Length: 440
Ligand SMILES: Cc1ncc(COP(=O)(O)O)c(C=O)c1O
Image (tube, rainbow, N blue to C red; front, side, top):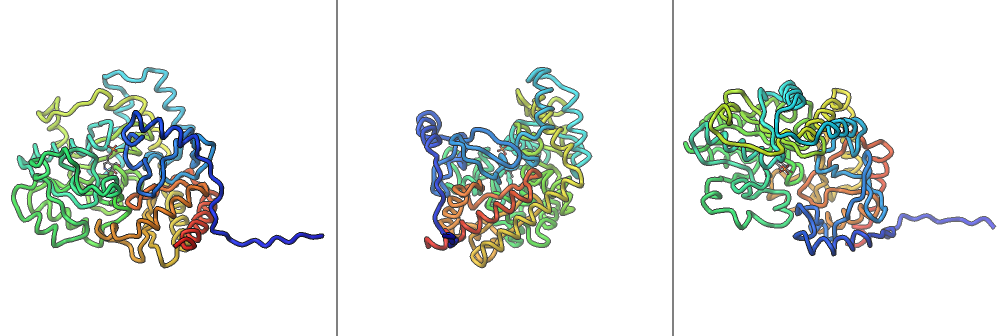
């Protein structure tokens, strides 16, 4: 007898074993606060425990239980070429074989600085650090030294790393944890930071009508409250207000640098900062970041000037090699491919999610907001349906897709994501939306 299968799309989650992750999580919590070395990895915002990763290749990541996922975190944007790219591995292996760290200058770091100077508008010189946090902190110190002023204007929902003065309403991890600012930050330090809502020209105007502002610091393409690009004219207004009040404009391109365009958002928007903060892609998946800008500002730094800044592993040869190998891959064809990948994914996700979600994208970044209209600021992002977003992410994970585990983050499509993987992602997304709708 011929058997006829009646296939219906069921909102039942496939079986998903994560027992080894659970065991590791129990061990981890005994020796690492919350079981993790960076808060958002704990996955609390989506209501589940973290997955422990065993290995990865291209756009796929594998956990310790052997589950495979199409990865849209890609080390929070550092891996624009995907995991374990052969050219990056080869460069790192060659560098490692020659010695892992010298604490002395190398030829490769000069080549990397020259490459950055050719790509990023206004980046005449750079000083490397090991993290974006240090680079942003150094940019602030330079701005204060240059202007002789203390106050920093930042935007609610923008994250510039975890240095004291920059933690006020800092989006991302803090938004995820619901912490407006952090205990342990001295009141005097917090008082030197003025926080302004993003995309609010009147509030920016008001905050900069004073003569003690050292810097306006902004993510020109903010991705730490989800992706919330500037509304028309707002980036130009940042430039205008910085000039009007005699402050420096610091553009934090740790995420957008080398991603949204060859020279980052500064190139895409045509609005240049006085200082630019770079990270993530700059280190190609190893720890590297930098503050970049004109000679006149960068040479305030020791040993030329008196502004002190240093780092045992700054310009580490392995990180420099990985960064250079990655930048070498990023030609015009790569940006066209990344744009096509992101568009396909974003349009597919918008189609799958329907009226309940809004998908915002720029080349290499997207966020699926659980709100009918895209937010324009942190308050709008907070109004999203966080419970539904969390449930959707959990459904994606059991269907083999690894999304950033918070509404206040962006997806990081890479050059390694294939059409087939994007199609599989969209099929999983459709099933996950159905499952969430079914359980509502
Ligand atoms: C825009 C931005 N600036 C700075 C940082 C801090 O970089 P790091 O985590 O390397 O300290 C981040 C981290 O995600 C970031 O997104």
